Image (cartoon, rainbow over all chains, first blue to last red; front, side, top):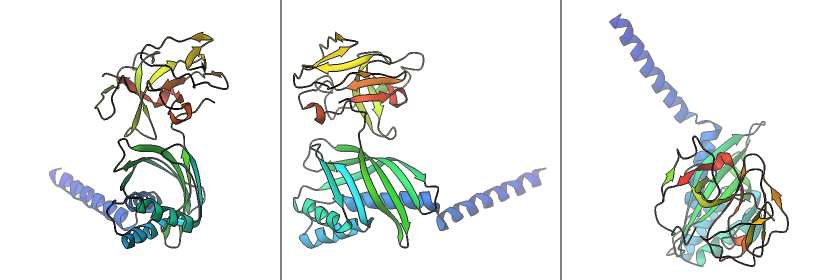
Length: 169
Length: 120
């Protein structure tokens, strides 16, 4: 009986280890998307002290997370609605934002990923917290993202800002 | 939620407060965004089934003005329409209404997004 328990224990440990290795080697769509969003939030953050060349490199890295024809509908911290279409426009805005100085720290919380019925598409819903280093309070915004799996990995195809509560007009 | 609650201060939410009871008008509650990591701190001013509107800064519930001693009125706040709340809907709003109505995060939330009552 004792021997059987030991064998079962070893099989259990080996099975768990094999499952962990499988997940690491083949993370699956949801894990890949979460990792991409994590990297995106890091790329969206910048320091106010970055040099112009570094700012351009940061903006190019950030733009690389989006599709060529990305559409972004988002509200700025002042409440004004901004629409950005195309990766190149987004990159220019990112450069402009960095050149204004101040720095920004972006993080995504409570990320919900819904894989699409068709392979290679998914939608995400998350809470973005953007801390402007010169701002007293953070900007908190719910974002809905559509992501697609292209040859080089998951890219963001659409971003929509969503009201935290249903407004009454 | 200023002046009742100051920005940057730690606030505690009692998750057990609504286990055997429903949220009440005047309660300051935590409201989730997409999860529980980030929450809004807002005051409940209208309950399920009630009809809500704001006119000249004054909140009206079922046509009657609501006394709100915890805030100073902003006369520019006026809703264009009345809203009758569903069975699980609440209107939440902050106490600091010094800004324009569209710059303030307020409106209807579902009961499922109310985490608990603020303790202090």
